[in-house]
Length: 361
Image 1 (cartoon, rainbow, N blue to C red):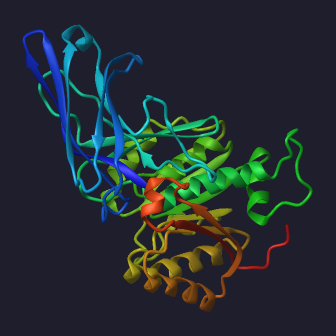
Image 2 (cartoon, helix red, strand yellow):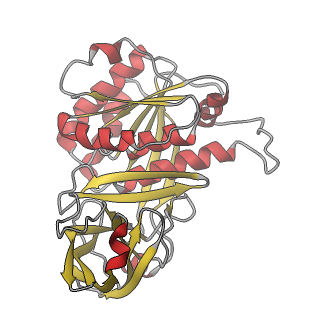
């Protein structure tokens, strides 16, 4: 899976009555450690917040590229009466990117934050719009080459897996299956009572915000280090959560004692997405998960991992030593049989469900 990223904020240029927009983009993996290896059409468009579209331009990303400049010219100055943005997508549409277990996007689109018509750059954030079924969310990331506080593959896979699990418990006519997995049973319970969730290492908040948008009665606490609090707050402020759902953010350093207000709560679900890539933090992560599951003995821990190197496998050893049992396991493919997948080895994100007890559905 790859991501369009803005390397430079889009800027306006003006020549008489005509206006142009110029930016520099790349297409990389979630960690920015590899570039898209195939030829790929990219469609760029300046759009207004009202939904109006000014002008499309199609350019070709060529195999071997590391970055490319996109310039859209001859934009009528009359279009500047409303606030504008820039979208760069592998699809000729302004619609959201669809996330699902069966069809993960090959390249995730990127939008600039609103472009102002005074020759100033756009705000230093990228916006992504994601959809699962009828659930849409808008998430801001930091702009540039830094991988911090961006959406990563395991977060997309987590969203797709949770959505699939919530649907799989029902027949086509909407009736409930008689036998549900432990995780599906917990998700089904949101229709009748509050679902108390804590997310560790939330980053920009895509998973927690999607859960609170997708499910009613979801009480979600998103946690991370101080540097993530600003982007979490921005994304929380524009979230449109489901009826009865609520979002909170909380500082939480795994090397420190569990914050008192979190230690005083019990949870139904604990969510962790792509937090094992830094092997030095794995022991602290496992200690934190163990402590939270000790205070919430009925809870399930849901972990999505894109295993990039063998050293991450110590996570499973430490979880076993802590007495945490793996109840479920699933693989979410990151791409279909497209050109990129033929060039690169197909990769999966694995999703694991852990518990401190043997779970009877």
